[in-house]
Every structure is written in structure tokens, then in C-alpha cells.
Image 1 (tube, rainbow, N blue to C red):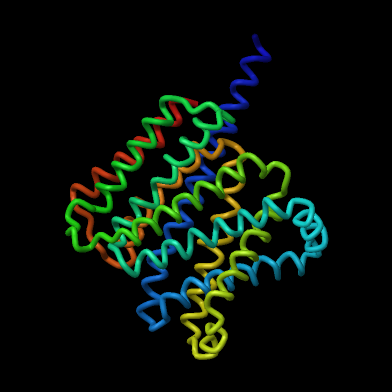
Image 2: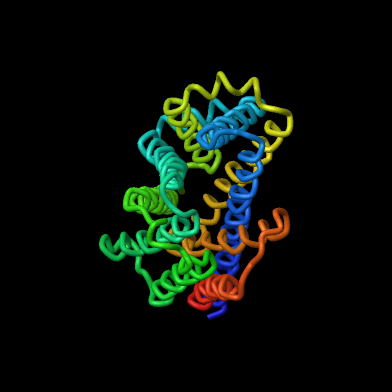
Length: 303
């Protein structure tokens, strides 16, 4: 009984640690929108923001591993698990460019709600494949998360003219890509170090981004020091720190719970926008924030 109790406490601490890591990842991701707005205000093209961010994060992480002489081991590890790493890189690319292309045709708030249907896709995947059991609390948390995002982003005040079928489909592509990344990390990530996952996924994402937008190299010399600094901050926080904390968190609590907790990005983004860009929040939005937080607490109760 004593050993069983100690095992239960150890598992509980592991779950709490994993949840905190995913919450930290959500906080890191939440800085992407405010910093992007600052870059756009400086005259940087939207496509260059996405490509530049992908390129900067890959250069930083690969440069770090080269400087610390870890690159050779990571390259070998990536080669041995190339199919998983390539799929994770494609997933990250699908998220970035699915969201970017969708924003051209639809409201950002509605797009965010579509994107945060990712937990539902993860739950459906596990329910169909039966690889992992999905508890009732997790299913309720998914529904609560989607409802909370809808209120927090105030999508009910969006006119029908602001909706777009191509935009919704691209948002769903980003959501499926998000779910794919977390599922792959959950099921295959333990075969890889988080160093290999981070370097591999970000490098493949950057290569694909440059292939889509090679003209960025012509425009890079015209970027100001402020723009370069914003790219650097955004790459470190929203790409490198986020993927490291997300990867380690998923390995602790699983993809089905992690995708729900990642939705904390919505209230974090609203809070950061309120503090840095002085954007206001309504009572309906605060209710939505409360629902998202409740979904996370519900998962803790299940644990």
C-alpha cells in the first residue's frame, strides 16, 4: 500500500509538472500575436513575418547546437527517426501557413476558434484508434474549451460576410496540423530527445517557409534594428521556448490533455494585448476566459 501511495504521488507530481510546462508553452505562444502586430506596424509584409520567424528560429537553434558541439549527435538521431521528424516539421509548417493564408480571407477571432478545435481532433483520433483511453472529463474539457474560446474571442459579433469557407478549411488544416504534432510527440517523442525534435521540426519548417517565400532574402537588408530585435524575441519565445516546453509537457501528460491546456493561449493573448497594446476586454470575453481556465482545472480533477 505504501509503495502504491508513493507511486500515486509521483504520478500526480508528474501530471502537475506536465500541465505547468504546457501552460508555459501556451504563454510563450501567446506573445506571437502582439509581436506580429508590432512587426506589421513597422511595415513588414505578413508573409515575411511568418517566413522570417521560421528562418530566425531555425538559425538560432541550429547555431546553438553547433556552438555547443551537440549537432553531430542530433543529426544522427534525426537520421534514425527521419520520418517522425519530417512529419513534425510538416505539421509546424501546416500550422504557420494554414493560419497565415486563412487570415487573408476571414476574421482572426473566428479563425482562432477554428484552430482551437485541435483538442477535438486529438480526442477523436484516440477514440477511433483506441491507442489511448479518453476520459469523460477530457471530452467535457474539449467542449468547454471551444465554448470558452468562442466567448473570449467574441465571435458572436462577427457578421456572416466575415466568414469564408476557404478560410475555415485552412483553419481546420492548422488545427489538424497542431493535433498531429502533439500526437506524434506523445506517441513517438520518447524515442527522440527534445533537442532533436526542436532542431528537426524548426529546420524543416524553415526550409519549407523559404521555398514558399524566397524573396525574403532580398528584403532582409532593409529591416531596421527594431524589426530585427522583434524577430529575435519572437523566435526565442514563441518558437524555441514554446516547442521545448510543449514537447516535454506532452511527454508527461499526453496529447489529449496538452491540446486542451494549450488553449490557455487565448486568455494569455488577451491579457498581453490588454497590457501592452491597451486593447479592452468585455464581460463576455472574461466569461470565455473563465471557461477555458475551468477546462484546465477539470483535467486536473481527472488526474
